[in-house]
Image: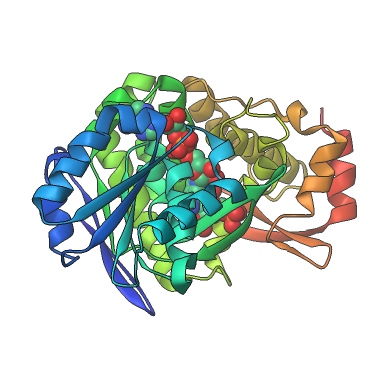
Length: 354
Ligand SMILES: NC(=O)c1ccc[n+]([C@@H]2O[C@H](COP(=O)([O-])OP(=O)(O)OC[C@H]3O[C@@H](n4cnc5c(N)ncnc54)[C@H](O)[C@@H]3O)[C@@H](O)[C@H]2O)c1
Ligand SMILES: O=C(O)C(=O)C[C@@H](O)[C@H](O)[C@H](O)COP(=O)(O)O
Ligand SMILES: [Zn+2]
């Protein structure tokens, strides 16, 4: 179990095999009886919704459900409107709560719903994908996309509890498992030390599954430490964006062709290639990063970033301050740094990427 403590809240991230059978009990430890809206997506609903609802009802809650289409497109204003309308139709009050049951898409959308309904009602994350278990359920970032721009609207809004059962991963498609693992590699590169050694032992997709508890615990612990020091991303939280400036720029341009973690994998390689050329990152680190990503089948072809629309999207990065991007470099495992580059320099770089 990891405890996250930020100025306005302290909450637990519980990681345990079999936790999905104790949902009612765990939630009763933090929430009194109330109305709950469980937001999920179609795939997760088919597998886990009815059991979750029964557990919540047995624990004394009145439960409403909202099932969204699976996939990134559900991180939209239309979904947010649907979710807020659903809460209003059921006459939810500030004493009620929202639960996200699903991956990062459901978590980001449900979190924003909870943050904005009546200016904020209680929120819990039940993380079912690897991305959600290692990253998105922790730290309070919520968001939706507009057009092809990632996470352009959102809030920092911390949950009251995060429940992570690694056995949910048994039903996750391999591609979704692997994309989540890109965020684990990201964290391990930022953390260095034992965590970096751990990802060095992962050689197959099956290794991700068999070591999932360790990978999740290390990622959550690393992220929680950062978030506790810098909840609102004024400083070191920016490191968690390693690979994301370019990753986010290409993710939605691929029209669903690239998962978040896949875009981040390409983004990490593209930016590290650049920083190796500038003698900021070591070529040994680039090689090792490349190897870890490729071993599990993540894309690493930095030529994919070479399209004019990438440059347009770069300007929407939240680390663009008046035309100067704050990029995350990893010099060596465990040695992240922020490097500033103008949009003009980045344009040159993108146009020259091969
Ligand atoms: N808020 C944050 O800090 C943060 C961090 C990382 C990523 N994200 C966001 O998360 C999103 C990506 O998350 P994701 O990779 O979980 O995508 P996702 O939520 O779309 O889930 C991937 C797929 O797996 C399915 N799924 C989830 N759990 C399952 C299970 N146990 N069994 C079978 N199928 C299951 C979903 O239905 C979906 O089809 C992106 O939008 C990204 O921007 C946010
Ligand atoms: O929690 C964070 O901070 C992160 O940056 C984690 C990222 O993996 C995640 O994709 C996040 O949603 C990116 O946020 P954004 O601020 O770049 O939109
Ligand atoms: Zn990410």
